[in-house]
Length: 270
Image (cartoon, rainbow, N blue to C red; front, side):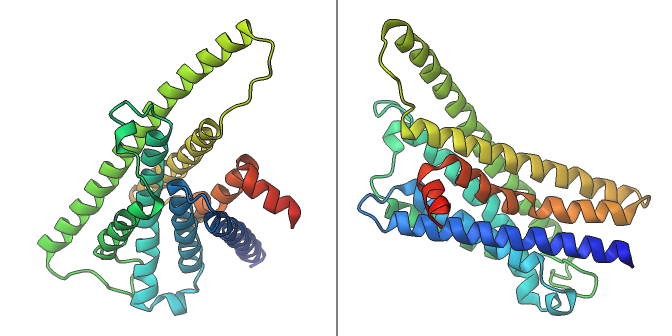
């Protein structure tokens, strides 16, 4: 009884902390986006933290309320939006720091609003995913073949998005390595102070977000496999898995608060 109370309190505290952090960062980026310079990356970050809020809200809903099919599907859609948006964020940032004359640089969106069709596509794609969350709530097709088709599309979608995320991250690491070499050369030939360009710092922040996402995603995946094949310490494994499911949504806003000077300024101001 006491252990359940501690676990419930800890979960609610982390969920509340995540909701507060995501809401603050979301409002901060909306304020930044309303300025004269509307960067595509800011629009994607707004979408990402909105998806995080949806995930924290749906995952923390009591099971008596979660029996509603809308809430159950909202949780799955929010998780899909998280991986889709993180992948898009990584690709766009890789394009942003690429030289304009390169193949990547030519793909740079001229306006933030040009990304709206891609974000709408993410919603349409993830809204088509049908899932079953709890035993008492069935929200899957009865036909076994259709179930396997949906499962295949889900796995394929995650693989495609993570492949794009990995390729864009590798490209950013390559560009950051070249920037580091240029930085060292500059310090050797000049006594002037050298400041890291905002695009490079943003790329470093997004790489941190990607690492956080991949850590929680794959740890959650392997914990799910463990829970499936073993019944030992099932309760503890399920508790850890519940935390891992929300880990990225809880941690990601604080990564940006620490890394992004605009958000950090708003944070210290409040």
